[in-house]
Image (tube, helix red, strand yellow):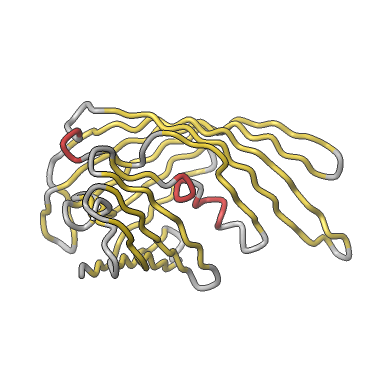
Amino acid sequence: SACDHPYFPLREGMTWSMSGGDGELLTWEVTEVVGDLAQATAELTMRSADLAFTYTWECSAGGGLSSFGFTNQGLAALGPEVDIEVVDGSGFFLPAPETLEPGASWDSTYHTVYSMTQLDGDLEMVIDGEMDTQQTSSVISTEPLTYQGEAVPGLLIQQDTQVATVMSMLGETFENTIVMGAEIELGRGLGMLRQTTFTEFGDFTMEVTDIYVP
């Protein structure tokens, strides 16, 4: 289908086993694909020991892959008490493969609202927030990458992200802007191999340990 992108194949049954820098084990699985070679959607479910979240991807032959919920996967780590909704978005996670040459770049923007419930003793505290995200992605290299000790055709992408947040809690409003970067390694026919995120609080790397290609 249109979701079977050479560098991020969202094919039904495709599975990635991932290891985080803190030793956490994650599984990504494409559970459903609907559509054809021109237009399709895919459901990607991420599971850890305690949590499971599903992200919908929109795919088109002439455009590429988009999933603004997937880009917010860091919020999902806060737990099942977080309700997240992307209310507006534009751009791509990954554009059409013929455009992916060194130096190519593309922008994406999206607006997210979220609500989180936390317990502080007997007090139930509700935190509401909004986020405006601006992201620029660039192809750094198309040199081969390494998967399980072997060289594979690859794609190295750099992402620069700015997130403006407004949060309401206990009658007060707080505003903050976060700037972070990432390097994403994608293998042709394999998808995600490694992702390193750079923040002011430290760096985090997630690396694939095994991939099942149906």
